[in-house]
Length: 352
DNA sequence: GGATCCTTCTTCTTCTTC
Image 1: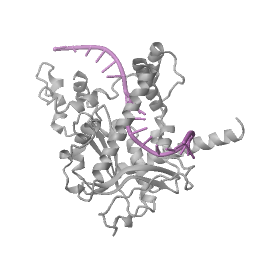
Image 2 (image 1 turned 30 degrees about the vertical axis):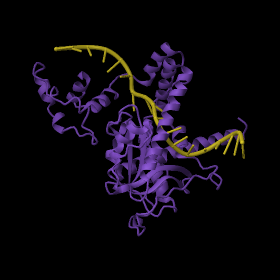
Image 3 (image 1 turned 120 degrees about the vertical axis):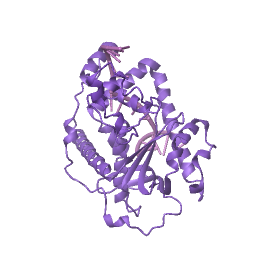
Image 4 (image 1 turned 90 degrees about the horizontal axis):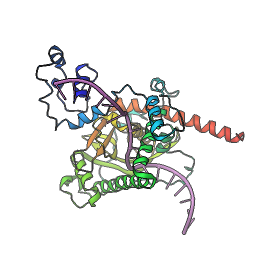
């Protein structure tokens, strides 16, 4: 709590858009500067209610440590690491060489296509000239920043030190299994007959025990989901040459969105806690908007982070402005991937 | 029938004060 108070007092943080914390809780910092003996204005904060905010602030980068100093420390504890890392902050400022439009054509927003009927579900068929088209997941994985690679490898080393190689493998398998089961349960719910919109998600209890909590967690989000247009459906961008599978396309609070369902053990109350997820959503939306199989355009994205204990999921809305921002980031990642691949191919061709 | 693909996840943390 001390760190939280200190950060708030020096003005190093502002209330993020996605939190419901009243501005008044952030605006009386001068009181603490006047007298440290006075009763802190934060002592009256409902710590239960804002526990996720506290967790998030406590886990954000307030330390002076960098990947380099952390690595030196880790080397001492875990042994040498394969590669040294340098944060690539300059990349944040880069602009893609080709600013490919996110939306195909503004007019197509107005569509005569009825929103009723079963959602599209175009399955991936690699045989149809798609074998060389890279996927969104692969591109994102292969273009992680050095900083991301560093923290992921560090996390992995620590987990293996704690659980052992086998234990770590099992832990990962469990996470993937839960994620898959959760996706299947959401899919079942959203496609369970023409009257699904009349159902109450919180009353639906016939889920596998492993996903019961996750479904309870997203029940308040499902109440705002209508007119499902696609489920687990392949999208492909022919011009930019990539493909992926969208979790869901539906209206969320009236706006057509690409929706990505996620499970997480840790609370992710802010969009920044979701790492590359917004880039993934923007990539899917951009592909869908260029794909002739879908006769409409999506403007927004939604990342829903569900929790196993049933606590309310965090739903992060990506408005059009954010989607365009992450679309630009996606184009950069795509450029990076293409450059890597062509340099790899040319070195393979020259026999290096 | 086997192999491969697309997903499913995983990261940002440390110590001082009352």
